[in-house]
Length: 265
Image (cartoon, rainbow, N blue to C red):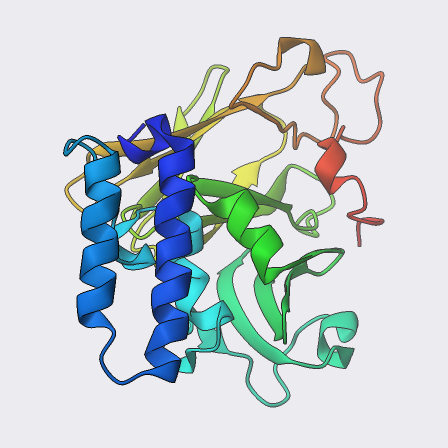
């Protein structure tokens, strides 16, 4: 936890200053002096100990990685544009707006669709949408945000599927860690704001861990398979095809937030 996260009201105040400064920049040619005074005031409020970042770029969270793009700065767009005739789900192709591929794994793509004040994260059988302000509230402070699993890889065994998510700028490698015997994890390197990773669905998940360019652990998201074990900060995430040890369940339990993934194809 960084120092700003210990003072959420101060962090919100800093974010508000950013918004005011950006608005003033569009109205007046030289707002720097006024903004400097405002930042100094924020520092004084904090007792001279905890400074408010001057821009969102100074904050290392998932929202900062996409903030400029979703507010209209195409030069800061993440991923790559969906190409003409590119293989994307029909429902994604039918949507209006700017579309970008953020990550790929297991033959599937995580696509972001920007439509004015709305942003959608789309997989073949799942989509989640919110306003820009809604995304700001849900993504601020997070370094790993799990979007959800893709469809099972069509090998007839239902033992592998891709998993997608977003990460902050400092996270350059993601590891999906298992809780049972066997290879402890599977990793994906050279990340740039998002990840797609193919996981085994016949093994019990444990966590997602994020590492910076130097290999230091900077983020961890615990994956819990039993709702009764959930504590603050954990995520309910069991992506196995048959989570019951003796095969009582035929279909994997999904996190409540991902329950509309649709039929597997």
